[in-house]
Structure formats: C-alpha cells, structure tokens
Length: 351
Image (cartoon, rainbow, N blue to C red):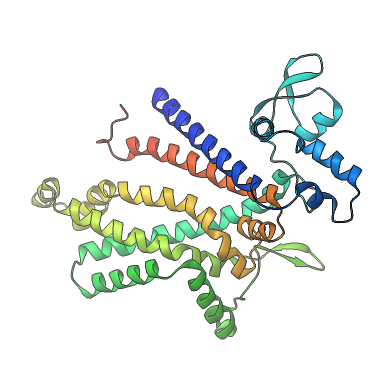
C-alpha cells in the first residue's frame, strides 16, 4: 500500500511539474509588463527597474523559471534576513552564509493590482468555492444514484425513460446557459415564490451585523453546477446496476429468498459504485474549475469569480495561482480515489 501510494505521488509530482512549466511559459509570452502593472502607468524608470529586479524579471527566462520553482517548492533556498522571513514565513533547516535551506508554504507571489499575497487572496475565496462544489456534488450524487437505481430496477418503464430524458437534457445544457435560465426563472420570474435572488454570495454584508451567512444564495449556483454531474451519475449508475443485476450471484441471492431491497442496496449497488466513484472524484475536481462561469453569473464570491476578474485586469499571479491550485486538487483527488478503489471493490488489486 505504501509503495503504491508513493508511486502515485511521484506521478502526481511529474504532472504538477508539467503544469507549472506550461503555466510559466504561457503567461510569459502574453503581452504586458508586470513591473508597470504593479507600479502603474505613471511610474518612473528607477521604480520600474527596482520592481523588475525584485521579481527577477531582469534575468534570463531559464533563471526566472528556476526562481519560480524555488518559490513554489516547499523546501527552498531563500535569503537569510528579516525581509525574506516576512515574505516566505519559513522555518530554517540548514543555514549557510547569506542563504538558508528552508521549509515553507508554496509562495505564489503577489497580486499586480492589490499587492497582496496570492495565497491570502485564494484563502479567502477557495472555502466558498469548496462549499459550492461540495454541495453541488452531494446534490448530484444523492439524486443521481437514486434516479439511476430506479431507472435500472424499472427498466423500459416511464420512470426509466423520464430519467434518461432528464440525463440527456442535463448533459446537453452547458453550465453557463443553464445558469442564465435558472437565474432568470427562479431568481427573477418566480422570486416572490422561491425567495431567491439572481445574484449573491455565501456571505452577505449587513450594516448592523457585518458579514452574515446567506445560505439561500447557495441554492441556484449549487443546482446549476450539479446538473451535468447529476446527469452523468444517472447514466453510469443505471448502466452499472443493469450489468450487476444480470450476474450469477444476484440470481443466487434471489433463489435464496433475499428481499428485493437487500439484493439491490446491499449486494448490487455496492459492486456497481466503482464507475460512479470515478465520476464523483473526477467531477468534484472539475467543479472547482468549472465554477468559474457559474460564480460569475450568480455573483458568487469564490475562486472562479476571483480568477475571471483577475484575468480581465491582467493580474497574472492570481490567475497562475488559481490554475496551480486546481491542478493540485486534481492530482490529490485522483491519488486518493485510486487508493479508495481497493477498499470499495475487493477485485481491485493494488499490486
């Protein structure tokens, strides 16, 4: 188990290395001067040169890439002074003359527009997006598995046909289109009955109480974000259940006189969950990335809205940090799911 996990971890590190390289190259060929974006259009030449030196922009591209890797690595070589300590918040491992081998959090650099650390910006928005993605995935999983099981048990009935029609509709509608329709219908036309608004974040500002948790603003983006994975889960559950229900051990269980519910939920559903778990894991990571337009449509303050706003303002460090965070989530979830397979299905062998 440990060897398998380490092997997957090495693959994950290789994937992250590839993502870092692509992100660095992509954002270094885009037009724009980071120093001028940071200091403004009226900055003098001396100030611009100082900022370029601080960011390492006065060096060659290979050296800049090495410095970027050094910033992102949890074990890095940094300057042994108070300024570097304040910047990286590191713990010393090995001290040299003017340098130190340090243990630190990955440093995603600073925003061009707000001058704040990208890590601090993401830490404010990622929890909101995580809650949105998690609730959307829970909604999609519960409804999707339930409809998929019903569709398989009552094959070729009106229930089966209705579930399939709903699944096709959910897959066909892009999130940005579904979001506009749902926001207009439930947040505007039927707002007097639903009590929901077209836009709003998880926390709203109250002049007397400050930030207030507003769960009603979560409903519409949650449903919008969960529609496509719900449709996929319905079809996967139906297909897997039909395959499992045709197995010999299911016929044996029926011959022994086991109840219908025991056969379906205790024996068949557990063995049919492998493809569903794959879909859930992949979609949960995808929802973090796919929430960009949904959050923008509903005015939901999360990672997606922050990234889109940063992209509009050419605030590249924020965009790069968001991309790397999403890639990291994909890698971690895929590793965890691979390990989880062995516990869900005994037929899966880690070796």
